[in-house]
Length: 333
Image (tube, rainbow, N blue to C red; front, side, top):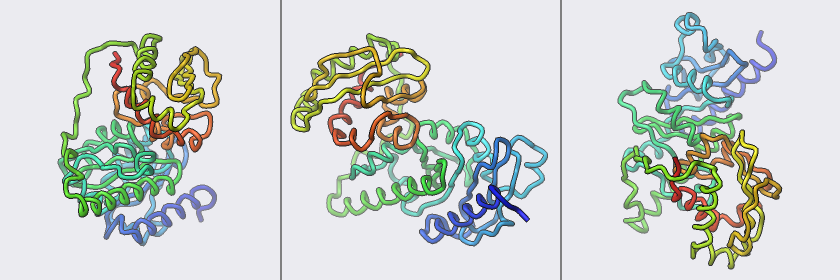
């Protein structure tokens, strides 16, 4: 008999598998699921199983660092991806599935057309990874993409979502499937709405070095550009963008506080004494300053920490979206 955490996790895997099948996000024997049991062990669905009809016997406990044990068990062909995810991230669950509309859309386009604020806030720009085989044989590319977003599309294959709860990972996948439906329906009304999305999957973000990231000169240049931006000035007046917002890099003692008054930054302080404080590790800030990660998305996915209410901050979503666009205009080393 299996009791406690292991039994609960197996029940969770069985339930989420059925839900994925009922939502037609998987069919037949496609897709696989896993959950972190402890520091060494995970639970993962076995090869050849149907996620819609899982039993406890279909879910295997395996030590991700024990190669002999790994070779001896009937693990899914995608086990190397799950293994690498748990070695690189602290997240507790992984969903890999093959949503029909998402697969069809990304077979044609390389980015999602965000038509709602919900899509922009929770998904942003979803990374797309190319693979050359039916199974994921280059998991390191997926790992790199998961640093940008908790949801990644594998072109001509499916999606991978990571989270601390199966429900959160599922919500990301459902949100993307819904965004694809919206884009597809919108195209019926306006044929050219998706024009321009067929860009190269791998953009070259290389740029001439200018400012040391998070240096005083770097942040002052951002302030300078914000205060010259006509769109922020206009929206700042209309929406009364008056607040104090601080940004901080983990591991650095100093922070930068923007004192906004109707869209203008009237003062820059070197402290984090503000009702809203955004903090993140250096690698996350680097993705943001290079335009690969939206700060709102990074916050909703837990890659950045926000002190203060995201709901309150979201009332200024429009001018802040422009602010974050300016972030990437200032070149960093």
